[in-house]
Length: 506
Image (cartoon, rainbow, N blue to C red; front, top):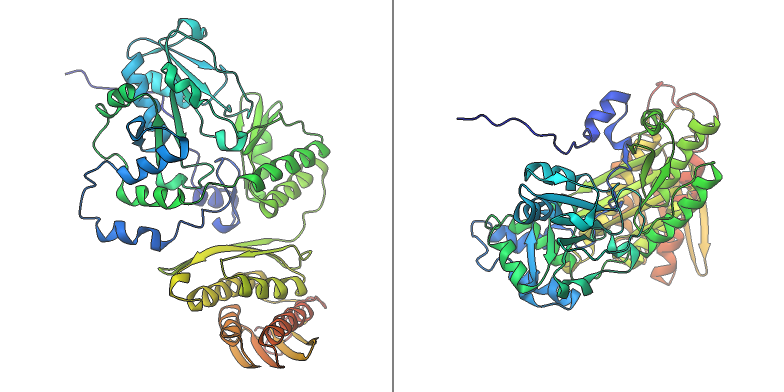
């Protein structure tokens, strides 16, 4: 028997934990700019989306995820028999190369493109050639990874496969080529934010889909992943914020003397010599990017994360002093999934979105008047009421604040504020005591205001007294949150290097 040997294979980058250990950072301080994924998962990615799939996890899906395939077909205006589901688009890249080019030839458009096409050719015993007009299989990466460029789809005699992993960011597609025999690949990993679920799909003529599915392993996608993908299909992905951030980042990088190529994706490619040198210099700042021959690829995340990268780049390229630390924290329970980025002190840049408009607004007021930069996003089981989400959003914020305060050395420690709002008046006193104590009197309470402050005090390890009265519950609550924010701002101001306690610790 001939023993197989290992092939030259796709190389995954090190884990976040390994990188953190290498540079001596907490893993929560590492930001991955090397994966081309959104900064947060979609709102649909919560425990409730998996409840039915978990209840039936002992069963197989007998219809090959017909509900998901039907939703995909409806989204793209094709027939149900024109959709195949796979474990990410990578499964199809490997499978299609084996089907159409085993022992034959493969070409790519452009030639500098996604490396998985070459590895798939190796697995199929195929030869990579430069001329698409002479290849048995032609992969067209559109828009292209890693450069972000838009490329034209050629007319070729071989099997044409158009990889549209990033098409949502470009706002165009090549589905019209399906009727001519092309196969279009899509993924839930990018715009849909489900990279960890590993779900992709192929769109082709019914005859080609029959060929593809006849060679797939049965149910290569798990029922849990399929449930997440189906839940994500309820809302068409909105990539406008990332596209706008991409354009902002382009300008900021140019101001640093870098020259990113115009991009149609959620990443930027910067031509440069020795890009790996810059990658290594940025690792101690917790910034992880990917170097290629002749350039550097940077994923576009959101303003808070991207500003941290820009801050690190200014330090490395211009010798500028870094600004304050940003705390990154996540809280996941069976009822809620919440992520927070917090910088104290900040510039009042605040965004809170949990689906609870009123309490989102209250926390925004607290953070803004507290002089913080805060981005808190997530989802909760709102179908059961607002209790779990309000409680956990404040606990998550409190946990991040506790991390930001550290040992509380050099902080004033005490703060107080009195805030009126029309007929309402709120008075707040805070002690960064390290002891969780809350004495809250809010009348009338809109429902969860007092409990929100109790949850904050518990996890932030602060002593908090709030008294607020008035006639309008909204005014009373808003005055309270503003007062707590202003009291915190005072308590967190710096007045030396001591821990303000005769014990020497809090």
